[in-house]
Length: 172
Image 1 (cartoon, rainbow, N blue to C red):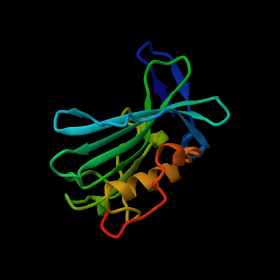
Image 2: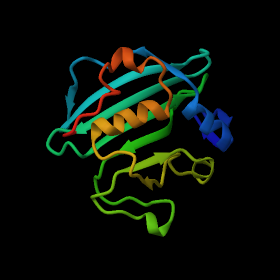
Image 3: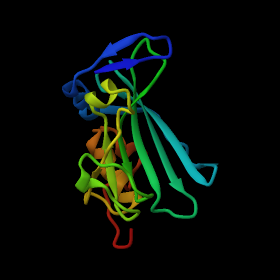
Image 4: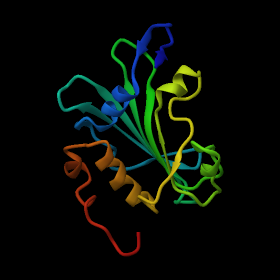
């Protein structure tokens, strides 16, 4: 896979390396704000991560539509050292309209929760790394998606910043 930065530097990643970046243990180095920021009808929050071994830097974005809470996006981005651009590695979304899935049967309507994962062939083809997506039954709300996301990307100190993340409630 080729990843170009704004200065035409090129890094090469295999699908295995992308998958390892997603699942390597990470720590929160800059916690999300206590109060979410409002921006164009969305509540917004961010945090910064580092791999537990200190080799890699990541960012996390969290967006929730103010009017339609089921319309959300939680994403993991990777910042390759020495490059200006970020690559979106994983994105968990609520239903927000149709998207192109990995196959014709994955095309969904407004009512499907879905996950986007970076793929080497996407970047090689010159499209967004996380283009396409998979419908998921792993979550059915923002809170469930956040729990799923934090587990999937292996944030080892998640409970320090999200103390109730392991608890489920009947009416999420």
